[in-house]
Length: 170
Image 1 (spheres, one colour):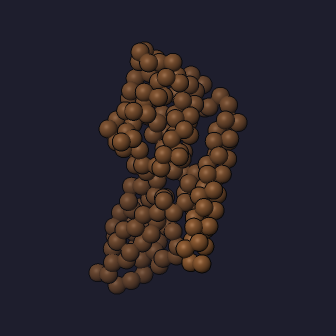
Image 2 (cartoon, one colour):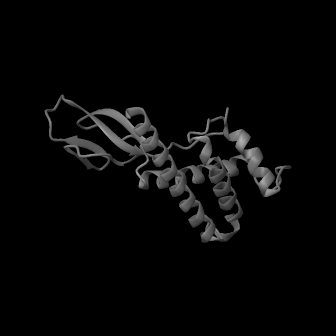
């Protein structure tokens, strides 16, 4: 099982902080959540279907906390975080939306597939090491390379999926 506690051990080795003197677990958890947020936003920007959620709403409902944007067209508008739509008062509507992952705690399971593990660890370390720079990563080139690697992974997955679909239907 891939939990944050197991990841923190790997992160501490990279940070040379196995004795827990430089970073508390909770400080690393904050950086870990920053990395999860970064990866979520990157995947949403690339329209990764794994970031889609569905829910049923009625007029006047509050947006889900992890809501980023609607996926598709709906007769919906948002006013101060409250859902409104052009249907009858008691009608419900099923919506699909882009959602980021909620903040995780030390016992949480990792919400992403294992092929993103290295990038989550790298990003967490970058955020941790940049705390003395006001939270700005010292090397934006590394973050940009991670962003490009995420794009490459997604393209590879899409290519593999389309090849498998072709083989199945042939």
